Image 1: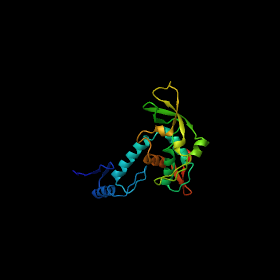
Image 2 (image 1 turned 30 degrees about the vertical axis):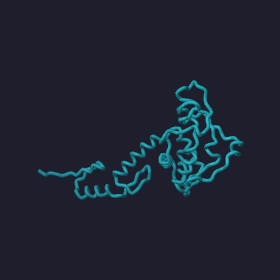
Image 3 (image 1 turned 45 degrees about the vertical axis):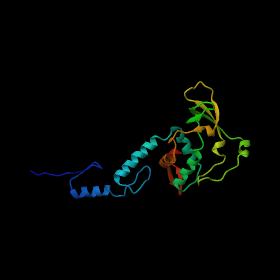
Length: 207
């Protein structure tokens, strides 16, 4: 009776008949030669790459639905050879501005923090623009003119749809914590862009 031994690699769910091949696969899995296919993180072990991909998938699923089209549209308005710079352009613009349909927290005058939906974006008037002195870049971040603080928004309280919409200034509006972040923004943009002629552009299938 011939007894055959098999060697099981739990990390990859593979079975080997040859012990040396099994050892080679274990060594390879523990080598820093793997990368996360979603985030692009490199120099990981096989297990770290899998964990990174799972984390990235969860982050992508959590990306705000109301921001998906605006963020992709903003990527078409910038010319960058670096994905990080492209993502930073979009983030620095979007973080201080709100978009139609977005769910936000609003400090209702004389009331409490209320969940509202953005109905309309009101552009700053020429008078507002003239009275606001354009500031220099702060903390190395990109600044855009006119500043997000000059915009006003028409909002509708979600809990009371029959109530009259309100016009509020940008300073009274906030996104929920971790709703939109640099990391989420970059990861989301990475999935829908590619390098064309040295510049990062929206993939044809999504343009």
